[in-house]
Length: 315
Ligand SMILES: Nc1nc2c(ncn2[C@@H]2O[C@H](COP(=O)(O)OP(=O)(O)O)[C@@H](O)[C@H]2O)c(=O)[nH]1
Ligand SMILES: [Mg+2]
Image (cartoon, rainbow, N blue to C red; front, side, top):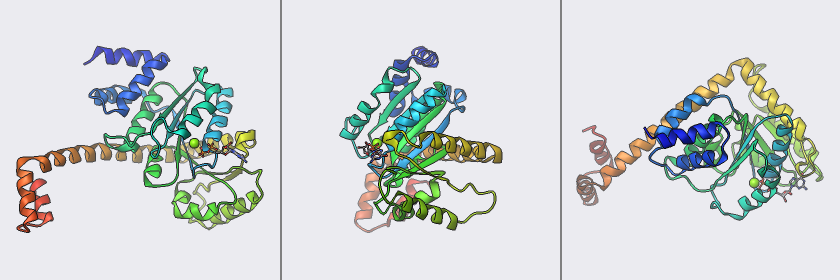
């Protein structure tokens, strides 16, 4: 037991930002104290609402996150923002832009912003993101906003920690077709059509209404509502917050929130198991006997399945 770790946790719980930042770094970097840290923080977590914000690059996610934050602050909520951008390094231009935009919040103790810009070495970026969210949850934030560009599987995986997912789209980019292709239809709880100042916004709204209507549903299904916004002018933002709150209510009322939590925890444990197995097999392949098996494989004396059987102890 490391007392300095407990000291950091205690300080974090009283709102000390630097301690929080250091604890997050421990999780992100796969520090040796990471497991102990999660052990101690897990019982303290579970009360935050986690919102995922996704959509194509340039759709206005960061602008909306900024506006949502301002609105939530007015309601007295403490807000944490996790910006995930696997494609750009920590100091990448986009993230820097976001930092400047977020400057109005930096002097506010009720807002905490963190960028995760690397792929996440230990168990992947989506697992690191889950743990960062757990730390923020234990640090008494009421709402945690996770922004990620909805362009690939990694980005969608990251949203497997959000209770409510907001998908943000813009007119004039053939977005409604992209929605289907990228699998965004399945994960959206609320659709936002941003840049509604542009022509064709209503056309996109109509397409989405049709698409949602055609999806498989019965009277118990939550059908994602569609909200137009002009994030940069703060138009429609309060309505978005109301829709997210409605979705949260729906989850609580129907018991789906607990089901979701259960699913998330299952995948959390699964991630840990996979990461352990992968480390263990990695060790075996690098070992002396592993090298011998690989040589036999190369000479075609045995086949890859037999090697895998031997390494996993099947034969
Ligand atoms: N025309 C218009 N531009 C907007 C609106 N909201 C955001 N933008 C602009 O769109 C650009 C991309 O926004 P950003 O929030 O960085 O998008 P992200 O990549 O999805 O995070 C910025 O230049 C914003 O100022 C809007 O409602 N209308
Ligand atoms: Mg952004």
